[in-house]
Length: 198
Ligand SMILES: Nc1nc2c(ncn2[C@@H]2O[C@H](COP(=O)(O)OP(=O)(O)OP(=O)(O)O)[C@@H](O)[C@H]2O)c(=O)[nH]1
Ligand SMILES: [Zn+2]
Image (cartoon, rainbow, N blue to C red; front, top):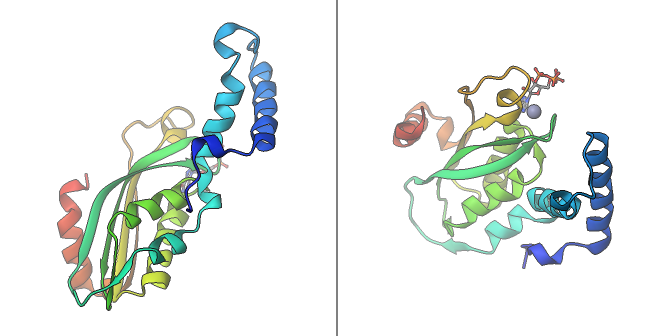
């Protein structure tokens, strides 16, 4: 089973990260012995491991585990897949939606596997551009469809809570392979998801 459960964290790693969070909390001027913070280093350690569990998961294996022979040759779209990731520059969250489409080439994939691979790549230190490309390449190389398209729109906390402090900017990234490199196919996909693009 490729998914890690919350209880399965390696004790040594959890303990090491916990000690490091204790130091961080002290260095920002807090008191780690006060009641509300006593368990915080351990919680933060587990939360960080949860948010970066994608390193331990194999997205191609997840797709391969549910590929079915089928002669459907039309576009399949799963849109509005919510995602939460961490920007690799500040380790602050960025979050939003992914829209994925593919045109089968003899095989379809279990629908839930598309959101699952979004999570595999999102739960790492990322930039939105690489996240988009990794999802695209994984589907393209594993399922070998006639075409695949990925659009991600996301808000970056590092641009909202700090830095430039812009609350409403949304970043859109996209990637297209195969049939989606043709303008008509790409436009059909963009039209079908456009109700969700702001
Ligand atoms: N291209 C890209 N940039 C990102 C992403 N997430 C965060 N960034 C940017 O990474 C950049 C890092 O720039 P630096 O100048 O090294 O960092 P900084 O001094 O904290 O920059 P400011 O955020 O402008 O205060 C910033 O412009 C962030 O907005 C992402 O997913 N993709
Ligand atoms: Zn950032």
